[in-house]
Amino acid sequence: MWERQARIIAGAEQASVSGRRLPLWAGWLLALAVAALCAALGFWQLQRMHAKQALLDDSARVLEQRRAQPLALAADPARARDFDWAAGAGGFPPLPAVLLDNQNREGRAGVRAYRVFQPEQAGAAPLLVELGWLPLPGDRRLPGVAMPAAGRVSGLLLPPPSPGLAAPAVEVQADGTLLLVTLDPAAVATALGLPALAPRVLRLDPDLPLGYARDLDLLPNTLPPERHLGYAVQWFALAAAVLAIAALLTWRARRRR
Image 1 (cartoon, rainbow, N blue to C red):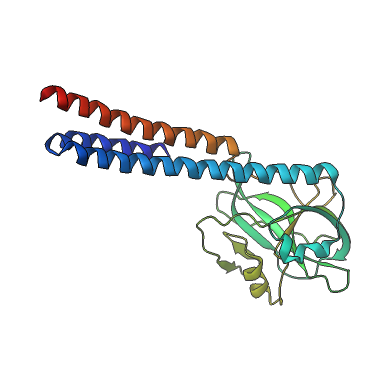
Image 2 (image 1 turned 90 degrees about the vertical axis):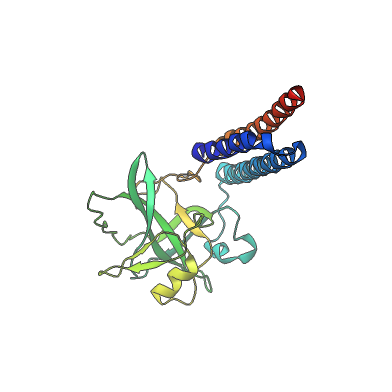
């Protein structure tokens, strides 16, 4: 972030020096363009802040009430981006585990482990259940994921982690385990030979006696809202600085004349 801003400032300073040979109106056009770009980036950061804060507010309300919904709600396309507390009985079919790579916890690199769960409710689509986080050793040898024996699960239904710029790709390991860099239920269903998986996943209640280290933090590997606000302030300050430099250079040019 800071390197990108430094490059913009350096470009503005270089343009300011060369602007002595340009008409004032050309220098102002350049300054306005750079300031507009910085302001646009600031507004984008504000939008990201509001979106993440709304996400946290919605999930906090669901976690406070913990009003259990049926697991079949995970497949409802109308609620694909929403949060619900859900519970139900069923079982884990004998399918390979799914590991999501590049997942940090307390400064350590690791993976998040998932397994397919089939609710016993008639017509309910299978869904991915997040069992928790596992560390990776220095040689990146993938950990084994035991098959849970629980017949009833509960937790938070939520959308899969944001893929960012990563393209969905599935690496099938020698033991059949799927290693992913972005969690796409449709791609996982295809790799496992399933007709479909619910678009939402279930993050297990940390109090359940199964799985691995986990919590209900919704932003474990991304920026919190306050960081986006800080970046927005930096971009707006940079826009103001560019305009201030343009005004100063205009004043000096007029004094020389």
